[in-house]
Amino acid sequence: MRAGWHLGLVCLASTIVGCAGDGGQDAFAFRNPFRTERGFDPAKAPTASTQAATRVHAVGNDVLAKNGGDFRDKPAFLTVGLKDPMIFHRSSRGVDSVIISEGLVDRCATDAELAAAICYELGKISSEKTESGNSRGDRDLPYSPRLTSDVVGNGSSADMTRQAEEGFNDRRTPRPASRSKEPKANPKTLAQNFLIKAGFTSEDLDKMEPLLKDSEDNADKRDILRGR
Figure (spheres, rainbow, N blue to C red):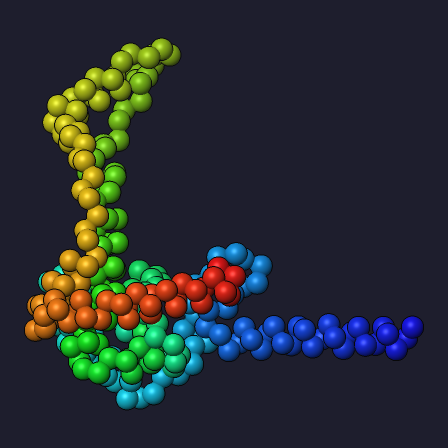
C-alpha cells in the first residue's frame, strides 16, 4: 500500500513538471492556467535567427515608411523561431505587433514575397482599425454643460430652471444627426494598396496568398491545440 502511495506521488509530480515545462517552451501556452482567455506570449517564443529577424525588420519598416500616412501608430515586427510557416498579429496596450515565423520567412525567396506577407497582415490590422474607428459613439456628441439645479432660491418645489437651460443649450449646440456605419474595409484591397505603395505589384500578393492562408491557419490551429 505504501509503495503504491509513493508511486502515485511520483506520477503526479512528473505530470506537473511536464505541464510546466511544456508551457515554458510554447509561446501559445496559457499565461495563467486559471483563465480561459490568453494571447501569444513573445517572451516564451523560440528566438529566430539574426538573419531572419533582420530581414523582416528591414522589409517591414521599409513598407511602413512608404505607407507613412496610413498608420498613425506604426506596428512592430517580431520574428519567432518556429519552423512552420505562420503569421498573425496581436495588440498589447494599444501597440500592434505582426508576428511572423522564421519558417515563413525562409519560404519567401524574395523581398517582394516577404513584403507581400507583411502587407497581408497589415491589411487585416488596418481593416480592424477602420471598423472600430467608424463607431465614434459619444465623441460625436456636443459638450454637455453643467446644469443648474431644478430648484433654486429658497423654494422647495421644481421651478423648471433645468428644463429651460437644456432647451437653450440644445439650440446653441444641436445634437448631430446619427451616422450610418460604414462597411468594413477589405483587408486584401488594403494589403494590395500597401504593397503597391512600397514599390511592388498586386501580383506578388496573389502569388503568395495560398501560403499566407496556410500560415494563418497554422497560427489558428496552434491556438486551438493549446486550449484557446
